[in-house]
Every structure is written in C-alpha cells, then in structure tokens.
Amino acid sequence: MRFISICIIALGIVNLQNVCAVELVTPEEARSSQQAAMLEAELTSPDPLAPTIQLVDPDGLDRPLKNPFKMEVLFKPQQGAMLDFSSFRAFYGTFKIDITDRLLKEAVKTSSSIRLANVDVPSGRHKLLISIKDNLGRTAAKEIAFRVE
Image (cartoon, rainbow, N blue to C red; front, side, top):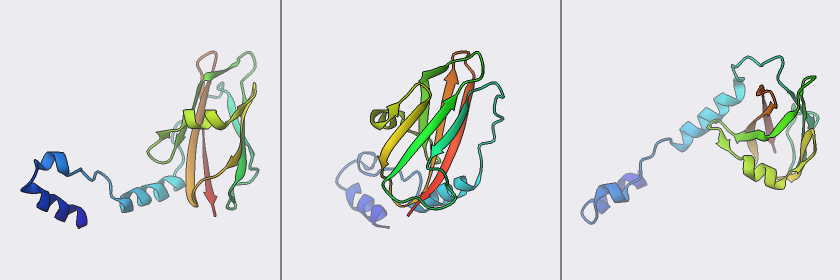
C-alpha cells in the first residue's frame, strides 16, 4: 500500500506517468512462480543426435548444497560432431535471465566442460537452464535445479 500512497501524493506535483512504476509481478507471485517451476520439467523432446550434457559436480542434488560449492558440467558431442562453445548459453530461474556472460567470466573452460569454483548463491531453490549446439546445429539443453542452505 505504500506504493499507492506515494503515487497519490505525487499526483498534484508531477505527471503520474513519470513518478509511478507499474508493478508487473508482485514478490509473492514471483516466489510462487519459482516454486511451481522447480516442480515442472522442460517439455521439449531432446534431439537424440544432439550433444549430451552431464552435471559432474556436485555429484548429488538430492540434498541441499552449502556455499561455496563447485560446479562442473561436461558436454559430449555425438560421433562425427564437434561442440560449438560460441553457442553456449546459461539462463537463471523461471524467467530465464541470461547469465551466460557472468558465468563464463568466472568459469574455466576446457574442450568438453565448464568448471566453476567457489559458487556462492543465496539460500533457497535455484534453477539453471544450460544449452549448447554442435557444429551441425543440433541443440542440447539441460535444466539443473538445486537447493542451497
């Protein structure tokens, strides 16, 4: 309600459009969306000829992680194809915020993996969607959901 009272006071002083922001999503809606999204899987059918994506570290996401933690993702192209690391993308959360540049800035990249040391994220549930293509344009995507204490 504080937001509404600020707008009403500002009406007499300045044009309402310039003062009041639109609250597109409430904090409660955002939390609810994040919780619901953790339960649902991506509904796309994977291309059987696309590269595979495997989370190597941490080895078990069935229990909460503790900060800081390491993360390593292994990419394996199918026979006769090569990975196209320029196509690598990483998205965070339900709204798929592109964090590719941030992640790559901190990552050690090998010919077949990406490793992060000292990952530190807020407590709670998190979801990453990572994708990569091979040189034949076949895309692989994997969702990694985890919880941090």
